[in-house]
Length: 249
Image (cartoon, rainbow, N blue to C red; front, side, top):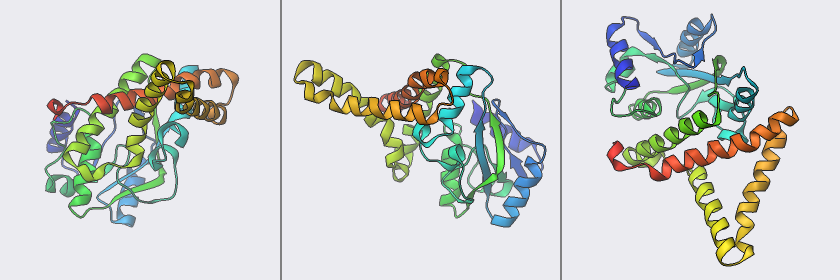
């Protein structure tokens, strides 16, 4: 598991600062020095920046546009950018070793969302988690719709695990995808079985999807791809959240 591997790496290292870099990420040459500088300036126990999604294929490029838009993934600063400041979580992160050790490291029961859960415990222990847009990490999106759906399904189901362990962390941003999924399916079913007026919620989501794709896309091809990519991200995340079982935790 990722969390177990991270804990082993931390235990094997000697640096007072621990920097996480994942397989789909590429950091610039000045990332480490800049992260340490920001950590000193802010007094934070964990600092991170923008998850700058960049694709190579046409599909990946379209996914990257969705991932960097509030219309696609919500308004988290590590996705969309924004002002430097305290946040709930950051992408990857540069941590103070003593802060990680003080809260017991990554929780190895988590297959996903172990970073979010750790940041929650760091903040609960009095630490500051800090976002700074000067930190930019290039992220390579999933290469096809099936892998994208699997990724977001896992995001949703493990975010539900975090919410069960830490109920106070649930907010409207995390509830939006499951509500969108249930609302759209119920709308289509009731519209078919009862009355056409019930199609209205599904039509509203369809209009949102259309407008979002128009705003995000940079070409006609991207627009068509986004009509499939955005609902895949929303509904897969929502399905994962809804079907997440207590057996996962």
